[in-house]
Length: 300
Ligand code: ATP
Ligand code: MG
Image 1 (cartoon, rainbow, N blue to C red):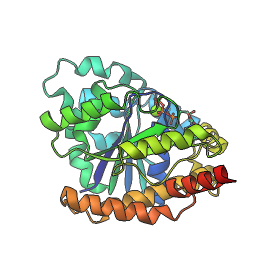
Image 2 (cartoon, rainbow, N blue to C red; image 1 turned 120 degrees about the vertical axis):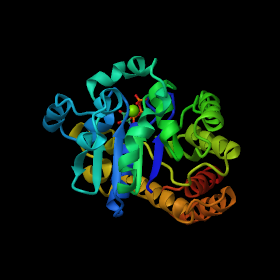
Image 3 (cartoon, rainbow, N blue to C red; image 1 turned 90 degrees about the horizontal axis):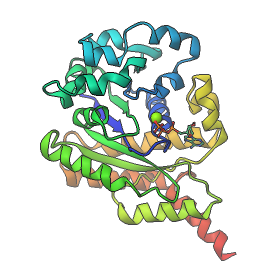
C-alpha cells in the first residue's frame, strides 16, 4: 500500500503547498505513481499544478474533494490526471470552506478522509495531502488518514513558535485516533544561504530534532515563487534551478528513508533515516554543505 503523507504546519505561508506540489512532481518524475490531495479551501495546490482554463472548468464541475468528503461522491470520480497517468490530483473546490462546519456534527468526522481514500490507496506509491494553515477538522482528517507528516519550516525568527502546538496535536491524534502516525521529517524552506538567521534557525531545528530534520534544504528562490502562476512546479518551470534541485533531493531522501521500512520498527526506520541523511549530505542543497560554507565564510 502506498505511503500517505500529510504536509502540515498551522502557520501560514511557510511552504506547505510549494512542498506538496514540488515533492509530488519530483516523486512522479522518479517513476512513482503519486496522488496529490488538495485539502486546503484556498486551492493553491490545485492552481499550482493546473493552468487557469482547465482549473475553472474543474472547480465548477462539482467533482472536487469537497463533494467526496461531504456528499459521498466516489473519490475515483474526483481524481484527475495532472501529469499523465503518473501524477493525479484530487482538487480542492470553493465549497471546501464550509466542510469543517458541515462535517462538525457527523459521527466519525475525523475519519472521513481516511474512509474515502481507502478504496484507491493501493493504486499509488505516494499520496501527498496539502493541508490548510490551521489545526481544524480538515488538517485533523489528514493526520488521521496519514502514515506520516512532513512539517515545512520557514527559516524565520518565529519558525519554532507554534511547532509545539502541532506536535501536541500529533501526539493526541496518535493516542486517540491513529497510533501509527509518524513524523516523517521537518524540512527547512525558504533558506537564504547569505542570511545569518537562516543558518541560526537551521542549527536550532537540528539541535531540537536531530533525528527528524531532513538533510535536504529548500532555498529561497524567485523561480520557485514564479512557477505556481504558470500552473507548473519549479521542476518543470526551471529544471536547472536550485529550487528544482532541492526538491529532487528531498524526494530522493524521502524515498531512501522509507525504502527499508516495509512496515518495520521505529529503530529500523531510524537507521534508514540516518542512511538517507548521510546520502543527502553530499549534495549542494544539504544542511551540512550549507553549514560548512557558512563556517568557512565566518573564518575568513
Ligand atoms: P498557506 O499557509 O497559505 O497554505 P503555505 O504554507 O502553503 O501557505 P506556500 O503557499 O507554499 O505556503 O508559500 C507561500 C508563498 O511563498 C508563496 O507565494 C510561494 O510561492 C512562496 N514560496 C514558497 N517557497 C518558496 C521558496 N523556496 N522560495 C521563494 N518563494 C517561495
Ligand atoms: Mg498552502
